[in-house]
Length: 272
Length: 358
Image (cartoon, rainbow over all chains, first blue to last red; front, side, top):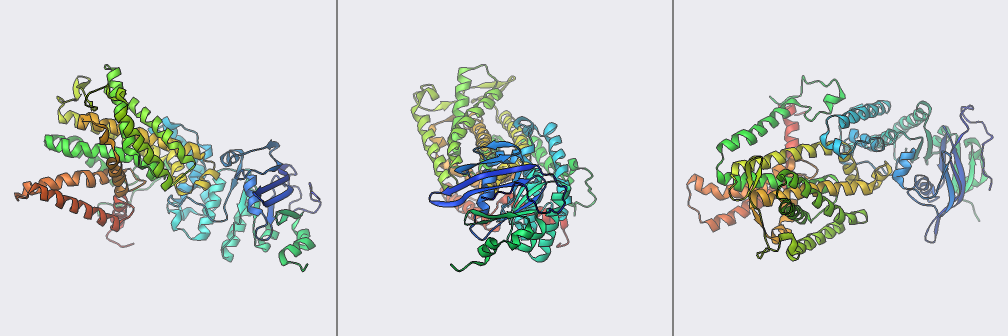
């Protein structure tokens, strides 16, 4: 296993912090006899954009599900912010600072854009049942305080015009953006994006890329993303990890990954 | 023409999130409250109180409780009447064990009993959903009615097996029992329904409401935005059963005056579910509209021929009644499957931009 702890290649923005935010060591996950992930180790540095790529069924989404605690790996150690963890509930992962978006949009369809993003702040809101029943006073103050933060995110992602629209009525590209907004509302340290550009047209892809870079640079959020659009992956990410059949076959800066023979084989197929 | 949002500018999030961002809505509500608190008491006779106003209020409250669970949190329940029964029997026991206790305190306490039972029967919701959960709650319905029949301690070993409400005072006013005047009972019920409605509006527009709706719309995503599913579902069961329990206690104490276990059987569960569905799931207003359609309309139709002076056989009227109400339910569901509350919402949107189509 050639585990790259620190890539030697030049990262874009060479003075980015080299602190390890998330570290996976020898993680394995299987469903019955099916091995989804086999003995994978890699890490995510604070402040970087980390891409996870691979052909269909390579175990990318399973990887994200392991990171945010939706799946429990049978083997391996996951260290987040210096803390080792064994078993994990998804809602606890959120309170530790891991947020994610989904491959298929998973918004709350009956709620407006605003309410969806407000729901993303659930972990930060604390007022108990008594104040909620009363509403006036502390519960309302809390509501308004969080509304302000949500409005900042709405401004940031340029979705002011759809604030009151039920998300079920929005076009697909905007739904993806609302989902990103909801994830940002959790104020995560690590943001997991599962195919943020799937099914988008060129313009929407450009917008989304811009937002991802802005989130990374302005908010300082570390991002791990899965994406099939290689142009986007190679331009955006600092380091790329490549999976195939649940195994890691490469882990390097984009330039080197592109030249890696194993990666080319995995994507194009080889004659045996 | 009078219903316009132009000229009403929001300059703070506080005013934007206010209950009535449109001024006319507040006026409309004041008008309705004036009707309920002043006009009805001045004009209504005993029959109107007993057969129309009080039942509508109590059924609205029960449907509101169910709506919290089914409409907001998306957990289908067929055990509403059972939980109402728990509230009623709890209130009965509380008032017999502590005769000196204020009736309002007894009502509030009995709600906690139904909430606890609701949470206990809500535990399956952590593993199952949809129709399977509905069947599980149906089991609670059968079990609870059986319990009300068999556990004699609940009805103080009465020979009749029924609970009877004795006369009770609320700060000198007789509010329960045969000597209570319909007017005081009406005001009492109206007061409680108003307070609970305000509390439910508050809770559904805040943190808990969003939590519940998130669980309803997509539970996996809700979990991944940091919502504790177990807590969200169980709080929904607790709040819902609390309100339903109070409604059940009020049904017996301020309307029926006595109750047998089979009062809380399945037909009532369904009736309340229908009110919630036709009124509009996920709405507070809808429960009142639904209760008016399902509870008040049949009564009104029954007395209509007398009022206009037509002689109709009462049995014939019953049948016509069922047909009219049934047809109306089908009509409203075809016009707006999301219920009467959504219908009003659409009318409201149209009124705001009237007379221009866009």
